[in-house]
Length: 214
Image 1 (cartoon, rainbow, N blue to C red):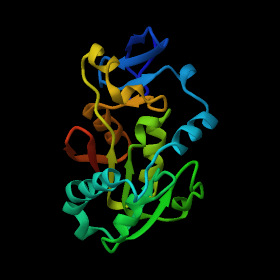
Image 2 (spheres, one colour):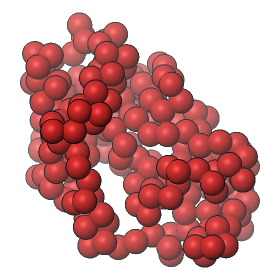
Image 3 (cartoon, rainbow, N blue to C red):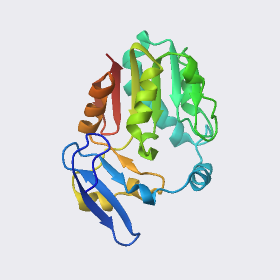
């Protein structure tokens, strides 16, 4: 039996017979992840991201971030001066929009902006939108973000929460992206938070979680 990467409890297998994919759903915290042996390599992943039309020319993409800032960031904006957008993609749209909020903003991306500027700095806010579903070891990355966060600072993540139904999950559009390998329940986020010095402040629209450093 595969053990959950989040809480280390047992999992149940889900199989996509058509594509010959195997997922593991944690019986305790609800975390779902693709079998590590089936994760695509870094070269294929980068080529997939390069196809994305994620820029200021894409109105829907910009509006998504404007809504994200309004709902998830603005309630805490009076406490924030510095920010990092972690996993910004090839065009740092969110970072630029945060700068327009009069914040000092850095950005990082594994493939497109790989300088780990956050290793020598601390931030009041770290955003990571549509990133955690791509991570093979999400707990490790979340710990890295905590280390770059000021005391009482905020981490705000955006990722879609999966259904509790195996059938609905296997038919879910979000799951079909070949780079989406990890899917989180609110409980899985709460468990990670407690282990690494965060608390969950808010869950928004079943796709955003707001943490604060304890």
